[in-house]
Length: 252
Ligand code: PTJ
Image 1 (cartoon, rainbow, N blue to C red):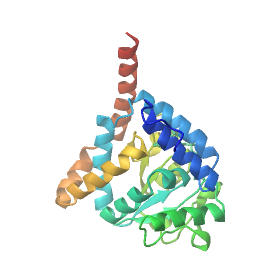
Image 2 (image 1 turned 60 degrees about the horizontal axis):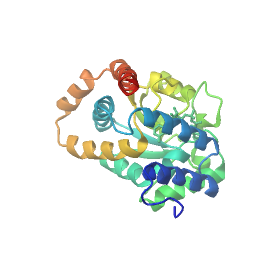
Image 3 (image 1 turned 180 degrees about the horizontal axis):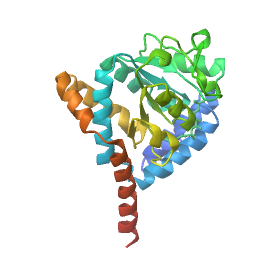
Image 4 (image 1 turned 135 degrees about the horizontal axis):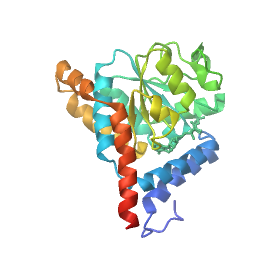
């Protein structure tokens, strides 16, 4: 935005914030997305606004899982569409995943606006819009239970971000592997996902794309080995240890 001075020490963070605000003004980001973003900013600040080793480990495992999946789907909400639309499309292309709009605060207008953004970013097909979201996830009561019968309903792997805990749990209960990007390692989503990337979507999507390009060349057995060695509990606990160590160091 023109209002952010070039030399502002937190310029990048302000530019990103501006994208979310624009999304709210244009109606495709939910007002609640502002609160979610602020929460994310706070955690990101504590993590040093850098992708840390535990996130890299989770990103590599995620890429292995996506490349091994039979039917991977990337689930998109308002905040993701505002921050990483082109990256969503590129990652989907690299790992051969479907793209599905799935909103907590679902309205036909928001669905269509997000579909438009994704198509302008190069997506051929966007699932979960209008009549296409005709299937339901059992045990869920929010509008997020509505999914595409050609997408999340039949997916074996779902990548999502800034997600609500109930739905992550419901997807896991349905037998799906869930990859969650969430800056809060204590959230229910972070705790119940199969793989949790504790990092900002702004940085993790480009890294997912980078590793997908590299790891595509690996043999199936090598990808399976990466997955077998992965331990999500250990990764979550190492993100918390990182936080406590960093805070002790700063407080000296
Ligand atoms: O677009 P909709 O209707 O589907 O609504 C989306 C929101 C985000 C409003 C909805 O899912 C929501 O209310 O989410 P929560 O429960 O606030 O959870 C958001 C989580 O994402 C929090 O744990 C934040 O720390 C985290 N988060 C926020 N921004 C980022 C993030 N994680 C990664 N990257 C970010 N940029």
